[in-house]
Image (tube, rainbow, N blue to C red; front, side):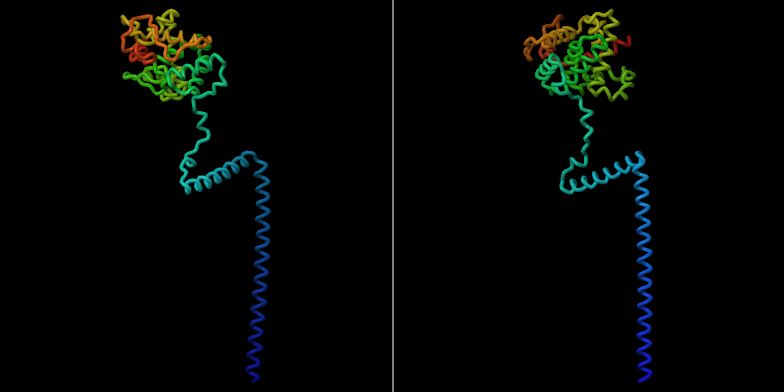
Length: 291
């Protein structure tokens, strides 16, 4: 019996010792963990204060947080089947060639509306082109209606037009010949940017007119490459006729959008039939400049 009692006492003592040990270890780990968390929190506060005091770091943190939120949003939208969220580009509107007609003067807005109806194009892009024609025309000392008339006859206001010989864009500039003129616009692909093509085309037109002693008629013949030919195919007549209509619109006079050109020179019937048909030989103007 004494042996059994001793064994029980020993067992109870062992349990008490193990219990005390476990409690001490637990308290120690709790203290270490508490102190560690306190240290981490203190470091986080120090880092946050430092970061908030640095504009560059604060900006990077904001960008990182925004990207994370955007990615989470895109992931949720993709899961719902909305693919537009993944390809969304809010800044894309800055690349658009467009202007509200309310931003134009009354004559400019009238002309933009008339052109849009005549050539069956949207008024907002035409409004931007009209604005630019006024601005660049003032710089180049050219009537903006002349610039727009050339654009109308050359490309029908199609910024992606290309002739069989490689004249491109609204003003049908021969890109491979005038590639250097596009250097200021980032390269020859700018030929298909309406505003860039307009600016380069105006410079070419201005040079053509200057090369012919300031004569608009002869400058247009040079522009279309008909200087050494017996006939310009009615090109000059169509441009000047279109310019006259545009001037009338700017002056507030009623001009039907279906009005036909009154050619100053004899033109082939098939070219006269369509008021704003692009001149097939327009790109030859750049070839003529090399002669």
